[in-house]
Amino acid sequence: MKILKELSKSLYRIIIKYIFFIIYGRIYFKNKKPKNVKVINLKHSKVKKYNYSSYKIYVINNGRLCTDGVEQVALIDDNQILKEASYTQIKGNLVTSKRNFTVNRGTPYLLKRINGNVLSLAQGASGNNYFHWMFDIIPKIKIISLGYGLKNIDHFYMPKLQSFQKKILKTLKIKKIKFIDSNKYKHIQADNLIVPEHPWYFKGKIFKQANYLPKWIVNWLQATFIKNSKYNSKINKLFIDRSESKFNHCKLINNNEIIITLKKRGFKIIQVGKLSFERQISLFRNAKVIIGPHGAAFTNLLFCRRKTKIIEVKPKNRPNNYKIISKINNLKYKQLISSSISKKKIINGDMYIDPKKILLEIKNE
Image (cartoon, rainbow, N blue to C red; front, side, top):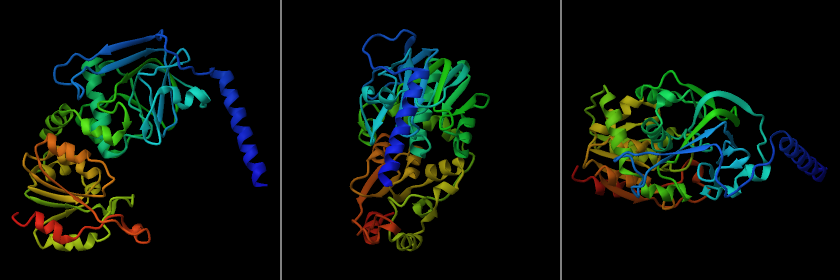
């Protein structure tokens, strides 16, 4: 019975695949120059890649876009995948567009036709995470504003916006543009599709590439958002309590022990996800010491004043993106590698750190 079900599923997928082949045609990977694509090189002295080369913006006349909503986005001109503009990850690794799902499966979703100019900010599922929103998506908007002009954009194409994202876009004075949910419409065609290069991810694993975050992103985000924070926090010692996170990874199994220890030393315990964006900026901007487990809350290190003391607790296998932000922002950063946790206890967290190690780092604070 199980074998029959699997055969039925396989047969169904094959039938659907060929139906969409008939409707929209196959997608080809070719080396020939695309017909309807204009490439804009951003000429700006400060907004450059890590290697100081210029960003490119692709404008595809009557182009198509198809995404799996997880790891891949195909930009298509006349049934040819654009290898430079498309985004193809497989198990977290950026690979050639020759391996994009559309080259094998075609475009297996009904097409939504959109009139006007559509800016694609989709890159699989990435973007809803606070770090990726601030360092991937928002910088793309800056690149477009300089090289194409936001007044020329009619629609943003991206996953459905969360409340914190709406507030940040409001700060950037982006209100009237319409949004198209990339999870609802996975296959679109527009008069013009506008696609900027990723600000810093060009090969391999994304968090290895985080070692090459351009300084302009940190500098621009600071200049843009700090001036809009109305709060004036007098709290100068923070501990980030990650127990609120829906994810089990990077949680301290002895979180309560750490909280009790640090409260005695005058630390304010915060759960960043429950705070407004403005409040987060204020707290990180005015803190002198910040301690916490590896997680998206550390994105706010970009708002810290220079020489702020940072202690990040992390597993050995987690990326060093917050160390890089600290380096760019000239912070006094210290990394504490957590002890491994047995698989039986990992349901309550995957990290342990002896409070004495933390106290040793802050003994003079």
